[in-house]
Length: 537
Image (cartoon, rainbow, N blue to C red; front, side, top):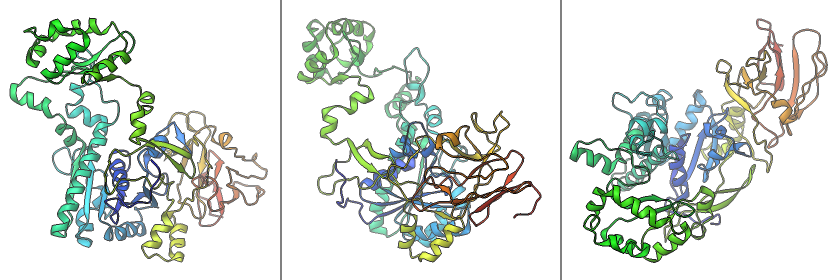
């Protein structure tokens, strides 16, 4: 699929995306694929958590993040400041859709809840995704995909009969919640054409997984019997499972009595076709214990590819259990443009999955690579009516962030840890080694305060810090010392930093080591370390 400038069916729709992780970003990505203008709002420190969910990394961001954030513009703003909240509130007034996935109550405390924003913009469609929903006794609990799969009962029916319950290979509770949100959003857009008003869409991971129990729950309602695990097999159909062959495993799906007849003819099991034990599907399910060994013995005579061709030629659904690389390399996948390439300003050429939405008149399209953190901040604020001098003031105050993308300027694993110092991780400088580095803010950057930095970061980034008592400089990529400043006698260590626009790792302000000092930041390019209790120089 080539990148396209064609307008999709949601062209003219603006989406304010305050989501992170998977469920929300997946949903907003699909809205972007369909032509909506999606503004991805992230904090000014490290953005969406999935930017760091690696390795692997491509450019500065994890492959995980890049897989679900195309067709979006990036706005980096600190919504914990009054000015930051005003920015998002103002954008919500002119948006058609807003989506968030905070824990229930958090958005309202920030002044970004449905009641407040819909009062300003009655046409706003507000979609909220959470672990357990906005109501009920579990509403306040934290929710993650694996927990939703577990508590919903979905894991109890997934896995081999004699094995442990397992989660799905990908995060289906998250992706499912994103798809439920999309359905709600599209329904609300349709309803708004009649009423002129938006509405609240309340989606939970738990609800989505419970809804996906479908026939498993139906059978329990009908019989009172607790559903079990059947591995690749189907509780209500037979033969419908993975079989070993002479080489690779083969999935066979015989879903009707007509397919049963075709299957027995193609596999040379004609003597089983009208056997009263196997003539109908209920018969085959009841006598699964004798049927499956007969089929297994027959399929062992040939390889998977041979059986796939024979069964498909007979009209029987069957196919290999492909690895991910094999699945993505299929000619059918290429023909349907389900693997695409897109140029990213920092990571270079990215391969990513295409869109499964094939619309004849207004097709979905891939128009933008995933944004670097805050990439379109100035552009979005200018469109919202902010003059250039006000944007500069907000940046200087740390309310917003603009990170210009520089082609191929990347560090695969910078190792920067922006978690508070009270939450160290193994491998952090200062964790068990007695050594501590700090990340300090400079003009145009937020004050990130006292933080830990992963051991070896300076060496990996080619940064240098002079010995105590000598001139110090810090150089990381294109972030270089404007001038080295000789350290005077005493505790104050000072360094001037220059950060040319669009160059270097703008998230990294300074790296200086001093285990007994507290970092202080100011609004100038001079950053000083001083012992606690001394005056700011």
